[in-house]
Length: 381
Length: 71
Image (cartoon, rainbow over all chains, first blue to last red; front, side, top):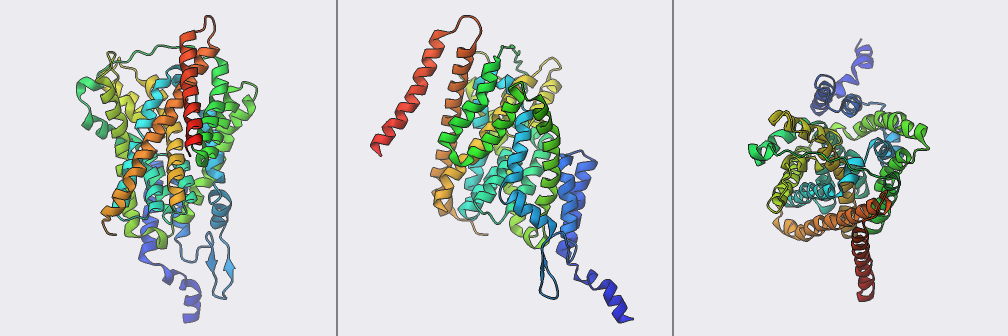
């Protein structure tokens, strides 16, 4: 009888409270994805993955069996072949590049300055994480969470061999999903009602097809010269955009935007979960990383808004400082949040085109910020 | 996890360099974009804008050459 029960329940007795905690975290991620529709394409696979990797002796991840044989788990295999070598983030960038219309940015290139300013949180957080005693390579990896750019976070953390890859990925993608919750109160706190009411009429300027085609090539070349470590990131992003803008590869562009992006997203989410095992995740450092990541995200928003406020001191034609908050990489959520906030203050204030321009500049700036961090930090670690 | 003030102070130059670096690179990208817009514009080209952008881009190249000599 005992033998029979042992056959059934031996594995169940190996359950630890940390694993149960991870099931709850997985459940919360699934709840947020389905009920609150927060970045469901990523949070749902991550939540489900968090549950399956934390079942005792889960065959989804690599296990050493009782006979000493190592059985490779499919999620570890996917991790090694798709994330450890940066393949998935880079392929996803082709899809993202194909989705982005740089038109609003090209018609007003000055908006790129907001993208640069909104990377303030990254560098502020680098200092903060160092202050909390994280080694430089981990502090640099944690700081990129502020860009709200999942693929860049994965890329940088991997290149720097950070041991907190799982927590960093979860934080980066969760905060991307939480843009509509985190940004509005921060923006309201640092702007006055008068500032939020500033109207910015949009003047449609023609951008030639030649500019749209040459822009991704020129950006790639410039970034490659100044931040070679992040060249692949910007190159794949711009390659996707070139496919979109060239006008002769519509079928490829559509595939990159839909099929490729969806396929990679399905695998990315569940593969990220391979790093969410209780032994790696349930640590005080994880909570600290989530906290510091939130600070990074808040200070990115603050950086963008404050930059607009500083510019307003010198400009005759005032800028609505809220558009500065869209300088993060979470595209197009951040632009939409700013647009909605503008409409809420004044139903005739349409900030969408400006905020979209700033938002796509944030996409470029966050990749360059990742490259800057790698350029500076890699030789030091 | 201990508070490490020395490590924070050591990080300050990295923070400054990185943040300034982004502004410089994006500044160059802005100039290149304005240049592209001006050159590919239909109708009459804005020569002063093209010349100013070219001068700025040449200044960047000049700075790189100067760095090469000084190194």
